[in-house]
Length: 198
Image (cartoon, rainbow, N blue to C red):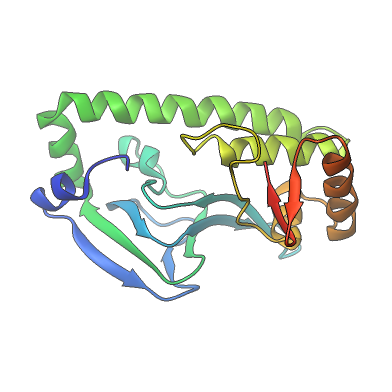
């Protein structure tokens, strides 16, 4: 949990339950709220010129949603959509800034979190520029696992279908299937009941 639910609610955050595919915000909207996932998952996506969906991240319980945009005067570069039925805590931007001003440790925690995200984003971008599908997929899996405390081998069940992995890495589904099988042979990941573990 990035910020405790109790602290967020003490500053006026409200719980909202969202249906699957509910649009939380759209690319081009102005950031007005701090969002933190309480239950379910949220995807950040973008559509290219051909209308193909590119998934940029899947955010799980305890994570915030594009909080970095609350610190600058820019519009959202992505869409945030409920990946499944989920619950979020929603705190107005002004109350979020006040929370940080009055709780320096939380502010430091947010800075650390943003720094870690940027670090792994750089690694993922570097891997995504590779022409090798295996390198792209490994970079994406490492990025998603980086959100977890348990970093032991095969501890993270990847909550993505092969199609979603393809959307994140800009690869074809068939290519993803072949690359995942190759990574299993290399003992980088395990497949148990069609689920991928890294």
